Image (cartoon, rainbow, N blue to C red):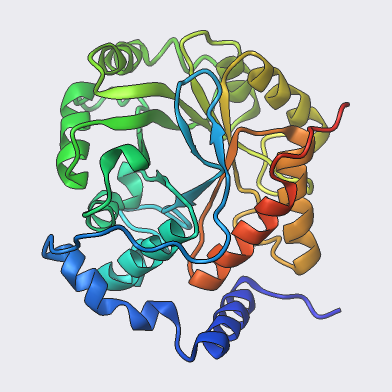
Length: 315
């Protein structure tokens, strides 16, 4: 069997959708995107096809779509594959995600995606969407850390909203992270107490950091790498799985990321296996997917819906 690369997948799925519609949705929507930039969008995008289901995010009190629209594929230096599409195509893509029922937007300061999401959600009632962002909180002795409240205020201004739903510490990579981030933790907790954000937590890229997060009481939300292949994960799937299930059982929201191994596990059988594993076997609260075309969104929604509502397997 010929190996399907990420580029091949993008080209094939987009071409298939284009054939069905006569043009790609990204090409068809620049006028909508321009209207969004001018603040002229009056109505949310109309529904298209089956809508992805909604789920409760642990004990946060937040209910949103089971899929989050990830904006950070190969994200660094204030850009990502999603933002590199350009504003028009990003807005059109986000609108297609909304039309398929996706109400959850996963951002970060490092992705440079705040203003892009801000344009995409103009005209959409704030209570209909869930907004998550992340702050890089690594302590740097050479620099005085910027207070969390000032960073959050900047985020809100970039997006054009008055509050975030979820705020995470970005990319924790070692054990003992809480001890060296007391100042940041206090800032996060104050933002929650002031109702500037509804839930707080961490994004983990290290096994010891992940274990610590699961055992930390104030952490409401954990973003963790999970797939059945162990690709770009912090430990073997059979080791990570029970830890994440423990977190979910304890009331934490677990957001699965790297579901397709950041694009390295995208063959048909791999995509199906990965979605089934995250939802039906691990039982994550939801998944964040870095989708880059309408066809990828359609594919993800159809796969997730096949396992939505399924009972999480024991063991």
